[in-house]
Image (cartoon, rainbow, N blue to C red; front, side, top):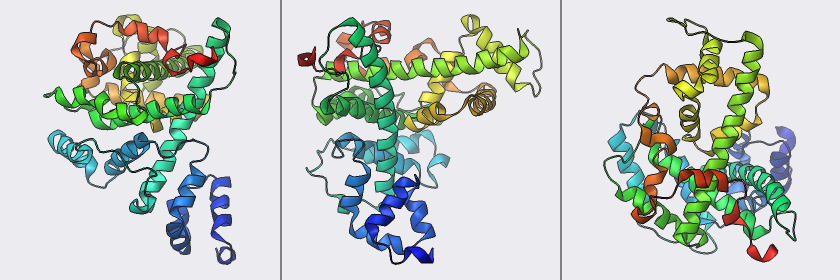
Length: 350
């Protein structure tokens, strides 16, 4: 590290970005970096978030606060009621952030979480917008083959809104706020002001993004299922699966029409937020298979996992977020709508 002492902070930042390092890890290894990064935090966060676009999105700050809180050492040991109280105190009343955001009030760890969230949201934005744009340009004429900055901001904003949803309404394998409808009724009202659409537009974008992620997870689970099927063939039910975790997953994959475990398992994965989704998409087939087989066994062996019980959990209570007058909207319509991503596109470009 001695060779780093005379380097300007701008070059240190470029080294971090080039090597895909975490700022906090770098600071721990090279403490003098703390001073220069703290003194130039506004420039640093703007530079590192440049690929994402609008770093002033309030949805980024909201999701970062929730993720930061959940990384506190004692948080995972809290009971459901205590978790709900902490989240309630953190969210509080809706207060718009000043524009531009005052980066000096955020700790270095909070800024790092914002960068992580921005990267996760950008990955989902890129994948979803590219898939949807490829479909929509075959269906209608469109002037641009790439999303505009405004369209990208909508994709990223909703991805961050979805992260906030997961961090607000799930705790491990538990649902939160089941005894009160008020937090769910307020959810989209709280987030409308982020991109200022109508509430219905926000609901549509949210459903579209969720449906896209469900569809992608189905694809990844199918990759694992077909890979194992090639190795093991058709699996018959056993009374005691012992350590045969791969066959255990394959049995439920092959008999999903009967047991309907794949979508429930997908909900368990998605409830962990954007980082889990992007992590799975980055995995190679072998790594993905090992992770899914072990994780599926762990979750399925827990008979008390609430996400596996109740017909109303098909969409993990997302349907309870919409106003009462909209509850006759068919979820299947959103599943179809995701592929076109119609609520995201600028109609003037068609």
